[in-house]
Image (cartoon, rainbow over all chains, first blue to last red; front, side, top):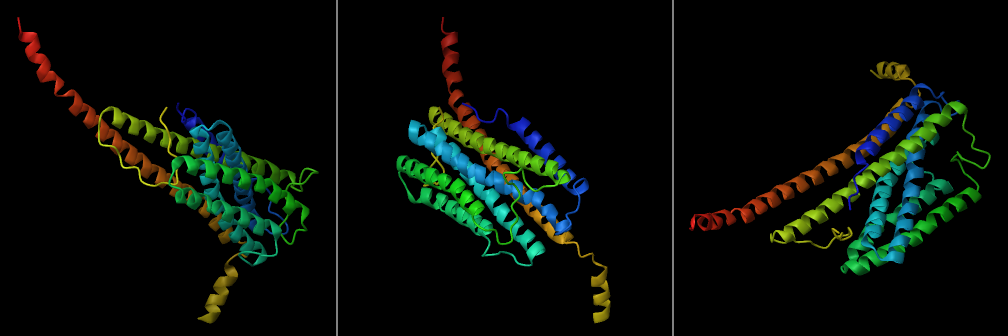
Length: 243
Length: 74
C-alpha cells in the first residue's frame, strides 16, 4: 500500500489556492470599516481554525474505523490527523492572540466562549500524545488512543454547538444559518482560504502517512536482508505494519 | 529627543500593519518549521536506504567467488 500517490498534485494545489486566497485577501477584499487592516488576519486565522476542528473530527472518525475493524492503518490515520490538527491549533491560538491584541487590546479574553472553548479543545488534544506515550503495549496503546479520539472527536461539534448557543461577548459570529454576515468581497478569499488550508492539511497528512509507511517498509527490508534490527524504543506513534 | 520620537511615532500609520504581518509570519513560520522537520526525516530515511543498499551489496558479493570455480570444472 502506498499513501503518497497524490502528494505532488495536492501540494501544488495547496500552494496555488493559498497564494490566490491571500492575494485576494490583500488586494481585492475591502478594508473592514470597524477593525481596519487588522481584519486581514481573519483570512488565515478562521480557515486554520475550521480545518483544525474538522481534523479533530476526522481523527475521531478514523478512530471509530480502527475500533470497528482493528486495522492498524486507521489508528495511524487518526494519529496523523490529530497530530496535524494540534499543529494547526497552535497556529490558531497564536494568530488569534495577535488579532485579539490588535482588535480588542488584549491577547486573550477569558469571558469570550469561542476563545475559551477552542483553548479547552486544544488542551484536551494536547494530552493525546502523552496518553499514547504512557502506554507501552502497542495493542493497548492504539485501542485506548482510539477511544480517546472518538470521545474527544464527539466533544468538538458539541462544543461548537454550545458556543453557538451561548451569548457572544466580543468574538464575531462569521457563519450563521442565513449564510453569514460576510460582504461579497470578503467571501471568495475566505472560502478559498478554507479550501487552501484543507489542501495543505491533506498534503501534510499524505506526507506523514507516506513517511511512516516508508519507514515500515525499510524496516521490513532490513529484516529480509538479515541486517541488525533497528532498536524501536517506546513511542507515541503507532507501530505500522508494512503490509 | 522626546519630541523627535513623538514626531516619528506620529508618522507611523495606526493601521495595525505590524499585527497583520506578525499573524501571517506565524503561519509561514509554522509551515517552514514543519518543512524543516520533514527535511530532517527525509534525510534519515535516505541514510537508512544507503545503509540497506550497502547491506544488500555485501550480501550479494560473496556469491560470486563461489560461483566462479563451478564454471571452470570440466
